[in-house]
View 1 (cartoon, helix red, strand yellow):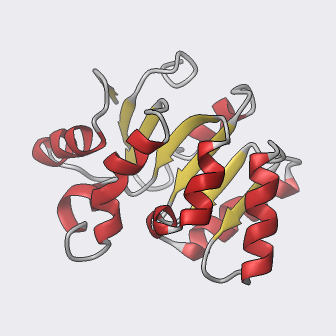
View 2 (cartoon, helix red, strand yellow):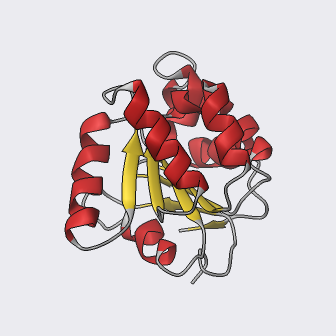
Length: 170
């Protein structure tokens, strides 16, 4: 309900608890693209394969795909041919991607493994710490940050770094 109401939120649930459903189901009703930021290529592939099997319009754009295919998928995203597009945080360094996404109606930004923003972002995946800026360039779409574990300090840091507006925390 919170996501469908276009309200920012942080969702802390154990692994296997259904975090993905919190953005996958609303994406069917959103009338735009749900951008899913995920650090794990294998997880992206598993989720996209499962969604496609269920008839959903989903894709991933990452470094395992050749440039021509990446460009085809980016163009299809611009045309509104996908409901869910999975990307790594580093994708927001791509000028081509940023140009295309600026012309795309981003209905929801989902940040999976959001603890990386706070706990390890500066060492493990520095691009996680830049997602607040990327979100701003997207026009501050409604955002759901998801993680399996986060202390109170990490939860606050995630919300601050993403600049979530009065987020509901679950």
